Amino acid sequence: MRNECGLGLARATGRAGFLRAGVLAICALLSLMSDPLLRDAAAASGPMVILVLGDSLTAGLGVPREAAFPAQLEARLRAQGTVVRVIDKGISGDTTAGGLARIDRALAEKPDLVILELGANDALREIQPAVVRANLDAMITKVLASGTRLLLTGMRAPLNWGEDYRAAFDRIYPDLARLRRVPLYPFSSKVSRRIRSSTSRTVSTQMKVASMCWWIALPPFLNI
Image 1 (cartoon, rainbow, N blue to C red):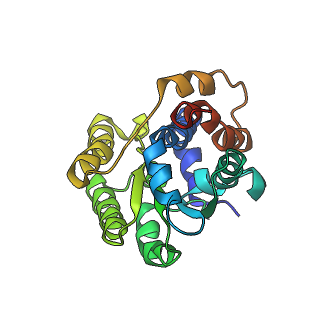
Image 2: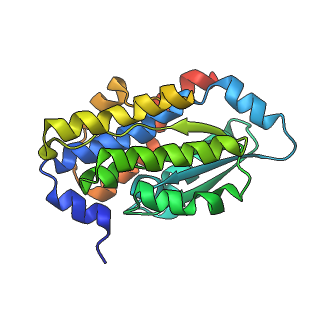
């Protein structure tokens, strides 16, 4: 069955480019996982719990679950000696409205850190930026109110909806990061160049890149 993300990608004129943009968001957010953040959570009893709330970029559309981003992240951090459990709360095709509907259940897992990766499908479906902003703000508020740290990954709108829509959508993430004082790392030019060098444009291949390209972004912040 085709999911919403697939339907949106079929409509979008910049299909490959927008997929790459979403992949970049996953890669870039990891550069915010600095030593103090990891040390603070690891100091608590038991493993550090990282919860990734997202869409197909988190769920690993087109690849086995063990090859998806959350599983790759957990394996790499464990290999470096971090006692960690990464919870995959990715649903292909999900939107910010869907994320808001399930955020309370997700927080019941008592995570130390939430990585919020949602909004790409909203943009593909041309959901109004004001609605996307309100949904994201509500999720951020809930996470912070629970005492959990949060990393917000930025998204960008495809060009086919026009400049007004693109400008309004692209402002959402930096605006909320400033307002709620949460870390945001929208895109990485270094990773962008690496993604553009890929010759395959299939969803499966792009998801494999999303699962592994964090190796480029994360090591400098963990001294590995």
